[in-house]
Structures are given as structure tokens and as C-alpha cells.
Image (cartoon, rainbow, N blue to C red):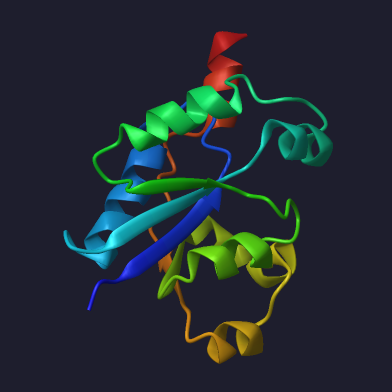
Length: 142
């Protein structure tokens, strides 16, 4: 069985934390599986965060597609309603960083455990890379 793994995010200023997350996605999917990244659009990021990303959607997509851990990049067409992109991807697993374990990921994504169970989707937390973040890189640049 080919395992499909879904993860999503902005992936601005691509860094080692992003690589670690995507590497774990690949390990879960296995070499024969698919890693699908739902990439936030520039418009959604500006609306959600109040400012646009440093890198455009096309630039961020190019970097992701050239990562050996990513098979496919799809736009997060639903914005705050991630269910649309998840249903289009039809994954076996959603993989997220463990930093979400202390936040309400279900509320953020607009679904609950019952919604995942009906679709037979598992939710996996993988270790968050604490030493690096896009926010930390932006602070270094200032």
C-alpha cells in the first residue's frame, strides 16, 4: 500500500526545521509513498498574519518541489478551512510538529477527531526543531 502523508504550512524562508519536518513525513510515507504539502497562498498569509510572506508562493513552491522529501505541492485552497485541501489530498496521515501539541490544532484546522476518523486519517506529531524558525531568522536579519 502506498501511504500518503499530508502536511501544510507557509514554508517561508525555508530552513532546517522545515527539512526536519519533511524528512519525518518521508519516513512515515516510506520511499514508495507520497508526501503532499499544502502550501499557504500569499493572499491567505497576508490575511491571516497581517503581512505577506518574504518569498512568493511560486518561490516557496519551487523550493519545496526541489526537496527530496516532497512529491507534490498543492495550494491551500480553503485558507482557514484546511478540510478542503485535506480532502483533495486524501491522505492516510496528517503530520505536524509537536509544537502543536500545546495548541488547539483541531480548532486551527477546522475539524475534529470524528471528522478524521470518518476519513480514516491519522494525525501524527513529530518532534519540533526548537533551535530555528522563520520568526527567529527574521529577527536575526534585523
